[in-house]
Image (cartoon, rainbow, N blue to C red; front, side):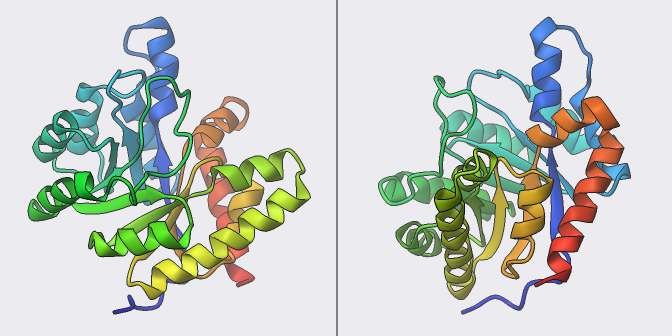
Amino acid sequence: MPVSPPPSRVRLGINVDHVATLRNARGGMRPDPVRAALAAIEAGADGITAHLREDRRHITDTDMARLKAEISKPLNFEMAATQEMLEIALRTKPHAVCLVPEKRSERTTEGGLDVVGGHNHLVPYVGKLAEHGIRVSLFIEPGERAIEVAARLRVPVVELHTGAWCEAVLTQDRAGDAKGFAQLQRGAKLAQAAGLEVHAGHGLDFDTARRLAAVPEFVEFNIGHFLMGEALFSGLGAAIREMRKAIDEGRSFR
């Protein structure tokens, strides 16, 4: 059955992975991603996202435990569908887990999870997380088949991968921009019609977040790398407030 109509306000989740990337480049304890998460919440973030990778290239196990213990907003734990990560998630008990693809060779997540080919592999992970009261989302491409399979997996949420569209916008590829935006619009409608809550993330900046917020089916954006870069020039709080303003402006035109 379809979910209830989406709220007028788009929730903003802040990904703090790349605060840890900067810390790990030199070692030691600074800058602290937990401090960044607390500052993000003070600036208006609705939740915090962190991706614990197999190679621990940025966020660490200790970071995840501290985030769960110290922040006052929901924690969204991004992870690959592996036994190790499942055990950590069940110990940490975040508000939500977003299952994502992961390759050691990639600099960042390169696309959506292969839910079609990986359906049988994902079933026990989705079931175990849900059994422990953790909201499960799948990071997927906005294609019809992926959305159909996500609904069949009985997850409550999908997060649509916006990276290809954002890259087209950034490189002024007008055809890619138009095609990517249309795919996201259609994917969001299909997902909501299938009873799924619809989120978006990867590569969003002020302009793309403003545009995507006009699509009423989206209820949450998760944004990290761009805002951490902007924070070098304007400060983290100011960057998040500017993003909040951009999203609200976009939503007002829907």
